[in-house]
Length: 423
Image (cartoon, rainbow, N blue to C red; front, side):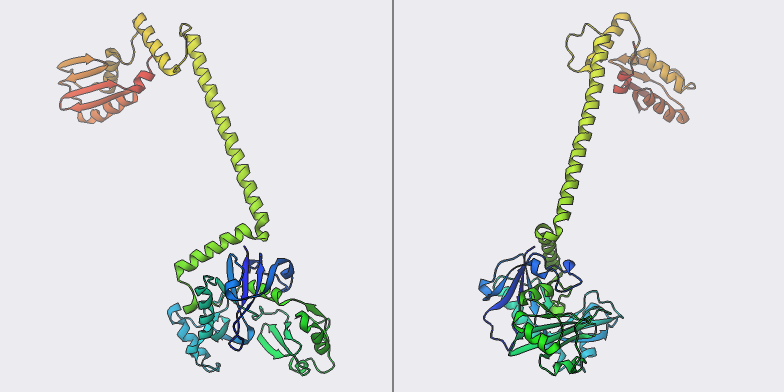
């Protein structure tokens, strides 16, 4: 999915044009262990433009500048979500330079109650105004991410230098927070490097924008990895953070629909998901071929059985000129043969009476017997109550349906009896 990543302007910056980057692989699940790896290949386009002229993309990701955020480590209280905002205000009140009600708070991804978590704080009015500007322009922001965020515990620090030679800034990201310092000769002391120490070969990688790369090497004495500011936006968009929480979060239904749309767009358009898409297509093709093969096999087996029935009909009754419906024609020929030879079938009177006699021997004889159209009526026939249900079951097993009306039993040969008829 193509993502438009926009750097929000700080209140001290004149709002005119926004720095942006376009990326096909800026989703959180694609985050690399190295914040700088792959950012160049994922970068589709970059530049700056007014809000109305920003490129179109599947999602808009807003990046909050480092100078607009403060980071605080707390133990998340065990309270319900409705009271969590008030609880954070009480915990952070003594650490903040502004009134808590004027600030917006955001918890680290995967924060759990009772554990130590990072909380990001920024000016609420500024962030609301920035997001509302995009909303009014018909470009709603899907995610809000920090430009830099604290690293997981045990991760080596990373150094990022941005700006211009006249106004260069050093951002240090580590597991103990995010620090922003002006890039001046005394910054080495602030980083506890000493005057003559060199950080070349150390575990801390240094990323610098092209305009300040030479100055960074001069002041820090380490090997610098040059990274464009647009690559930094892509790296920020890959963060698992989303600062749009509490009153800045969308409602549950809108958020769910937006996430579903983003997931679908990511699945359809992202190059990283291309192998999965090809695998799914191959799996569906294999299943389709398998179902077609299975259906062909079943049709072949059914046609073979039909051929056997037709062959049996023509071999048994050679006089049948054309086979249209083999079972019906065979039943007709069997009935004609039975009638011609005088054979008894299960539809006749004698087999019906024999079946009744087999299932109930203690009943008295009926007062009258009527037989017409394969239906036997016994009047004045009373089967013992203990035997009545057994008689009905026996008749059903032999292929007869029966009904009782007082002292009258009506027995009729059904389709099962016809199918079991013998000449």
